[in-house]
Length: 149
Image (cartoon, one colour):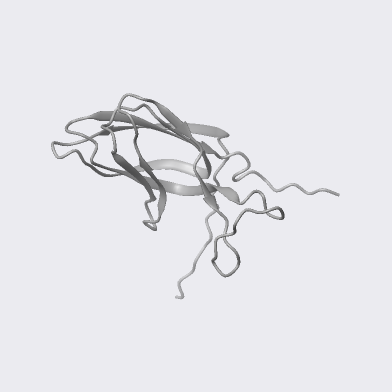
């Protein structure tokens, strides 16, 4: 008897704007190894950091599946909270970064997450603790398509 393959319907429903907090604790050498976190599917629209790690700590957020770096952030003054919207410069169809000018003033785009990420810290200070908040906009992801007539 021949085998068969039956498709399974998999749905991901939009959860709107989702915030995920990640507590980071460094070890005796000031590092935190890669921790895999399930964040979401959508645009990364905000990163919040409470300032708990030493000055010049390097926080790296990567896509867990591909290993591609999404955000690499170097902390400033310890104890100073930071909020920012990470973005990337668009590239042309041959992979060259587009430079902003009069005809292309807005060349920055949000990062898109597609599932799990990993968070790593280097030079964070001995046994320090910080909190990283990631805000992902899942609006419209998995929602039925609209037909405009």
